[in-house]
Length: 186
Image 1 (spheres, rainbow, N blue to C red):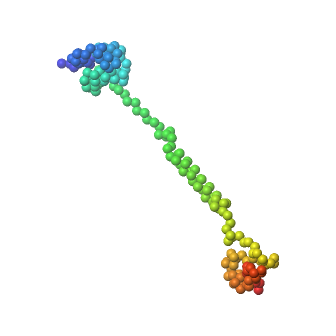
Image 2: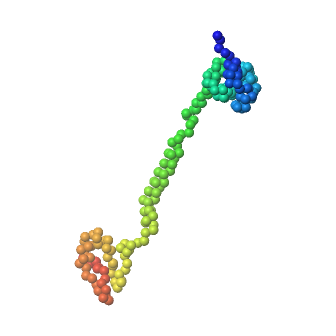
Image 3: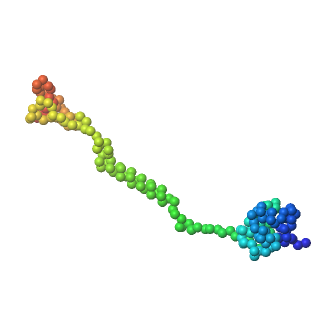
């Protein structure tokens, strides 16, 4: 016995359940003209491709039938097999994802190098805002004579001969205040 044609089988399943075309149309939101075209196998009155397969799937779901089985039967009868479009993109034309992080890293490296050079060149911010301490500035000694030369404490510490001469130098008392030791010339 030959298999039942697609349209006749669909109509028979609908009638077995006691459902009219109008009820199927209202429940599935498919126009009755498309439902009649499915049952009468008038393929030229149906939209092609996914629309007709969608109609068949919806009607099968409503009637409680195997959706995939009905779609396969439809594909065999009409030779309307779904095509899958595969989109292959060109790998060479894709934007490089490493470029933005590399640019940020290069910018950070440039800023760090500039900061390092600025510190080496100008001594940093601490040098600009620093106030001189009392040890590094030599102040004139009160009561010292105009001809006397003040002795630099850094020079004394750096030269052993100057340190010895400074220790041997007598202190001069003027107005009751001790003055800085004078260097004695040999």
